[in-house]
Image (cartoon, rainbow, N blue to C red; front, side, top):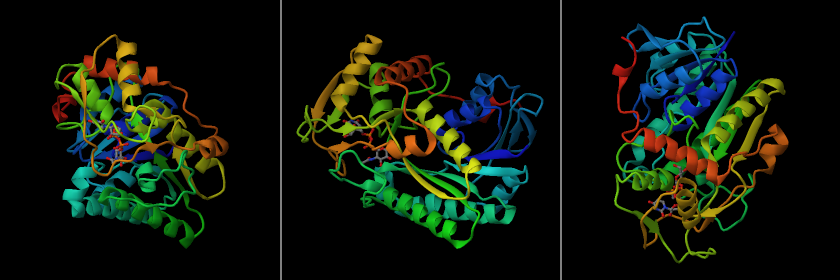
Length: 364
Ligand code: UD1
């Protein structure tokens, strides 16, 4: 059986998708440098999937062994490093899900070269390695950030791409690179998945988002306020042209997103070679205050907040048109805003310090 390689598989979306693939009975390899992901997340993924413990096989390599219905191998390595990629592909990789990348907008403005290096050079090296190892199936983590600050509601995949920060430019560059590669020779099966706002956590409370430092995004920040780690939520702008004046976004549960990856992979493998480009979102918009109220009602907690000035670079509304994902792969979100709030709080309240441990949590 061939393996599926997840670059960045120890991060938020990668780890949840890893679990969904293992539950499907697949053999999964993860390549991650742990810069924004945790080995402890994958130890828990193996546990939730009912696999054996991740045991160290050699320096920087851990595996559950292949005795179960599925198996997981974890390699510590950098997606920009050809040697690390060759080690990952040596396991016989049939398809790649490419999550590895940097994703903080403000940081990308301050450190643009780092973003071009990790996101663009990383993707380039990965494609070169896929060429060396004869692997031509790839699912890429793209982003609704490509659409920039458009007023179009909802946004279809055909909307113009107009990123407004270095992070967005790097995602646009990789999307372009993938289109060029797909056109260069027959046989490539590539999906570019444009995520809207992925939030929530696995319902077990064992797996979730563990941002390092102060969270940039609304949902993890709100969770930390609810937990008493931060005094209050700053709501960025109360004067947007929206029903309650706060920004409207398309929030989707990370387990729905994980399912979207599983479907995309299945479609790529079943159909003739193609370049697939899909929005992954719910198609519904919720304001910042809607999210705060849903969180309070679902969990019986108060979330103190105050409305402050707008955040530079924000837009009023961002909502997916998700019809193409439904048409092409029968996927739509199934989990509600209440599910998101319940599962996010289950994770935050059970893991106030996130995953906490480093590699020491793995055997050996
Ligand atoms: C952001 C990025 C986007 C990236 C995505 C996932 C920007 C402009 N966009 O999306 O490129 O793909 O994260 O990493 O940064 N808000 C508050 N208080 C906070 C935080 C956020 O009121 O403390 C508001 C924002 O103004 C916005 C909404 O909450 O209206 C969602 O913000 P956020 O979670 O940061 O996501 P995006 O900005 O939509």
